[in-house]
Length: 129
Image 1 (cartoon, helix red, strand yellow):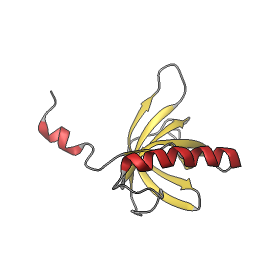
Image 2 (cartoon, helix red, strand yellow):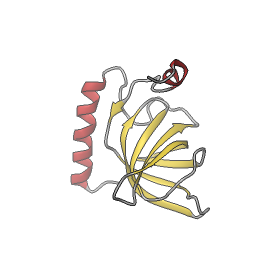
Image 3 (tube, helix red, strand yellow):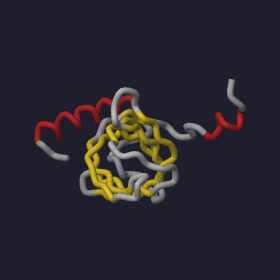
Image 4 (tube, helix red, strand yellow):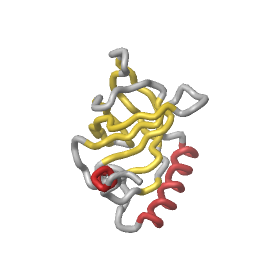
């Protein structure tokens, strides 16, 4: 079992499973600027886990996430290469806080998780990114 101090640093906030389309802008490990489409896997009030990131990043790198009409600033906390692909999952921590950034209520995660899944389906139908 891991030490208590490490465990207390993880997941201090409620997570909401939400697959939301986002646009990601930043610089990769080569220092090259990039912008790409990705998606969230789950979100908290102060962070997000992204999937389908196709650029390798360093921890503490700054990233900008665009979701609908919102622009949010984050820093990379961890990055994991997905086996058998050239994609990464990335854990991000918000450097600016906006309680309504994802338009999700964190007080009722089960209801919102279902809602966010239907919202993604609606956005996919309409072709919104």
